[in-house]
Amino acid sequence: MHLTPEQFVDLAEGTTPESSTPHLASCEACRRQLADVRAMMTAAADVDVPEPSPLFWEHLSARVSEAVAAEPPQSGWNWWLRAAMPFALATAAALLIAFVMVGRLVAPAEQHAALPVASVAPPPAQKLPADTTLAADVTDPSLGLVADLTQDMGWDAAREAGLAPRGSADHAVTHLTEGELRQLRDLLQEEMTKSSD
Amino acid sequence: MASSLAWSLPRQWSGLLMTETDARPLARLDDAALVAECVAGTPGAFDLVVERYRRSVYQICYRFVGNHEDASDLSQEVFLRAFRGLKNFRGQAALSTWLYRIGVNVCLNRVSTKKALDSTTGEPIDAMDLVDARHDSPADRLMREERGAQVRAAIAQLPDKQRATLILRTYHEMSHQEIADALGSSVGAVKANFFHALANLKKILEGR
Image (cartoon, rainbow over all chains, first blue to last red; front, side):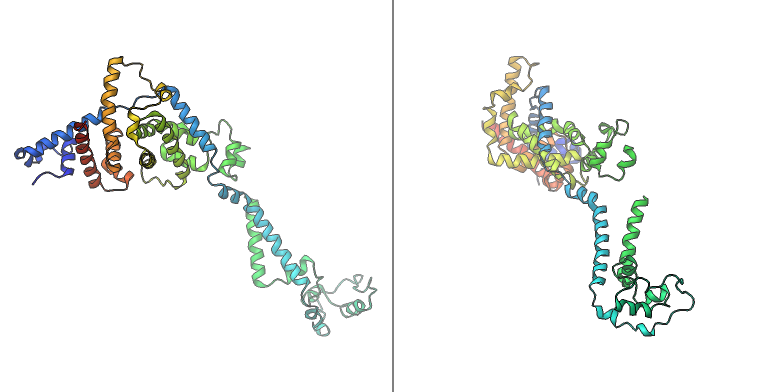
């Protein structure tokens, strides 16, 4: 059986010694074929690529450089996103707070009207200072009624009764749900971590 | 100041803040580190890749198409494609092997649409001006060119895979395994292609 193409290549390149292929000694056709392979390897190797002028290499580099410069930025989205991320997070936090506050402002008035105002008992420990009467500057009669009812109420009791001024940060924060609070806490923590870095 | 700000900025921006003392000597980086700098957008990094491999890429292209003008255009195309694909280069193969693979693909695409054989006798005058043959005597040059043209023409007639294998093995000293990686085939197939390329080369040259 004659040698395979792989065997010819290994023999021609010297990877395999001829002594390890006994078939060669007895096969004239394979010996001739091996000689042809070696001759063609030499003929091909003798062909040089004409060396371009030394100026050519700089010319080629300049052409490539121009072509590359004309390409759109490789990872434009990535670095724009990285740069914009802090602003995006801050905006998201502000929007979340605004959303929560607006939600509370437009909540049905009945929610507050139905509050059991009469049953709110003023806690004995935290009384308002004597000169801080809620009715002091009230001219609206309905507000006057509320002022009368809450005259002896402390700050904590007023908060529990939902009387923190709507639209205030105090009101917004004290009326957040558990989920909203967790989300706000995470966002604030993230921002504070970044600014402390 | 530059170094204190640079950490938080994208690499493209931090490059603008780099001082002379901050600048890393790109020329000392190995290929893998240089590729990383290219991907990070470091100015000058890709220029250095071109500088390192322009000669071998040009030679591959020349051996495929047989003339300076096309080889020059193809070399540019190879580097442009390499630039576009750098972010996907994972370093499984050597940078040179990866570039040669691109080179072979670019050349095969071009050769399939244009007969390279014609170029052996019809080299443009302006391209010949760029070839440096000042050290040969006219007779030597003529004989060398004659023989070289015959063999190049014969190589140009080989089937694509055989030609690519012959070029990468003979002129770029790539191992059979590297050629297999570059061409997406097996070592056995590469050896078989090489053998048949040489056998066909003989037939073509004898038929002239």
